[in-house]
Length: 326
Image: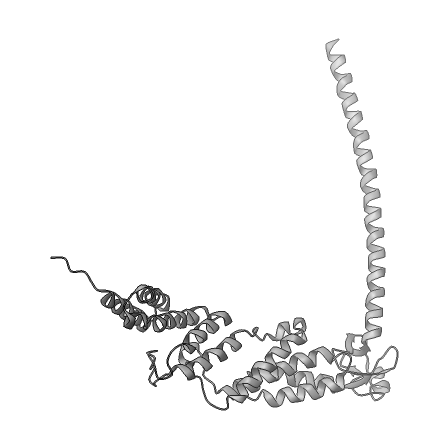
């Protein structure tokens, strides 16, 4: 005897398979089964079953968001979660009970967090102020949530309170802003870096060291060895160049200005350095062009000589052939 499953049984089977896949960590499999359950419920004429379609779709979109981790996927899950009844207890495999209002807000927050670019110290120079604005906006949003932690912290791997994450994002925003002005406004940049440091108490040592290093270098003021003008900001507005610095030079001049001499190096302002570098490049290019020109002339002479020798060889061969025929 063949037994046919009812729509309700098919729906329940698909939901059970979805939760089973979820428990195994197969979120992609869970999405497929929840979507199948949603299709069954949405096409049913049973009012009770049709009423479960939104819930099945929510689970599909929720685990799809955990798989993709994109702003759009979290937004879609949040929009679907908002359609559920406020008293609906959601089965997310967590120890605590979860209800739609709280989860909707959390998914909206995750959409904002996931929209941010990764903060990379090596790429700060290429980040414009719009990125700083985005960090600041999301950071302020997280601060407004207070010291609570994410309900989904284990699922999304964010194991900090929201205000700590918010402070760090504000610190990142300040770093980007400081980098943008450090060349022209070193004093202002120092203030912004100091603000960043206050926000970055929970940041990685690498980030804090970066800011401390910037503050230390920006705080240095010296005189250019070449033009003698006062200049602020090591590695930003002045650099050190290797030179033949003996004890006589050190004794006589190192007190003229702080940081003027650093071992076997002397301080040179950005203007003088670029002038020297550009002049050196022009001189190097001139001699390079001259060397190339002479090499090409030599190549032409050698090629001409080779052609002449080849012609003599050809003539000699032709003469030898005629002699042998005689």
